Length: 141
Image 1: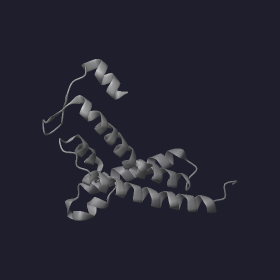
Image 2: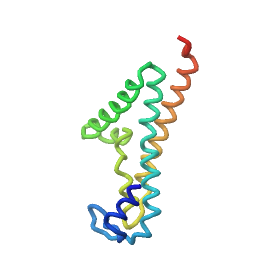
Image 3: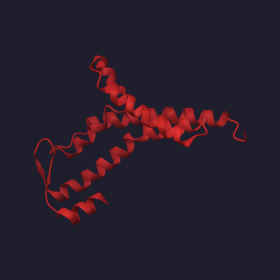
């Protein structure tokens, strides 16, 4: 919808990459937008999985959402702490901007692969714990 609204409002033209100033033809960037959207969805799996896990621990839906957003805020703050060194790469928020590599003149997958692997790993662990917890929970109380 954003692409359609932007095209209607501003017209269809080549894309200038933020930061580098490189210009990519508009039709060449459409598949890259798909990569960006896919990566954004995968990177948010951690938030969804944590909210799912917290929802098995509480009766409050807002508690689950608040816990997931709280994790995101804490990870973003920890990401700024340079004393953590390479440990920051294991934070779910570290690879958030890796989608910018999809808009570079030469497509670079390394950051997105690392970010997706971290997100999928965390999501799988959190979902497994949520299912284990839910299976043992008394849902009739």
